[in-house]
Length: 125
Image 1: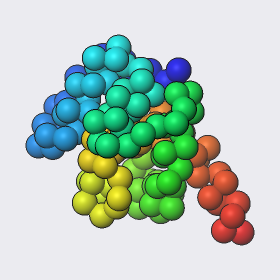
Image 2: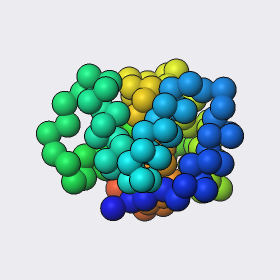
Image 3: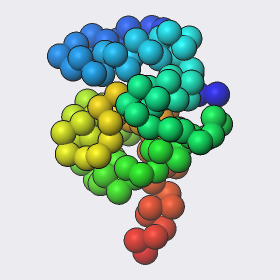
Image 4: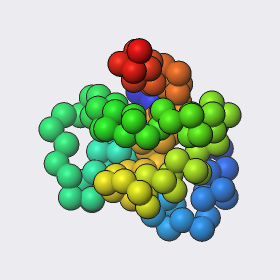
């Protein structure tokens, strides 16, 4: 289980105050006691998606955006826990439902961007 501490959620609310969809996502994460996967499943249902599995769904969904998250400009920011740029990009320039941009980016950030991008890097060699 990947969990986001309440203090971190509070900090993210302050950083993302100008993004209503992000705030809704953070509220759901808080309502799920910080459990990122549970919140992502709930948000996916709200976004009209039909997750077929519980465990590992967010991981699989996040991999759809690996080609974006692993670009040097986003990767460098994620390494420094700076997530706003990628959230903005996903919400404005991809097919990622706005409600899921925050869980996707938090998943990538918390699991480690280098780990997340490892298979992407290997496929480009």
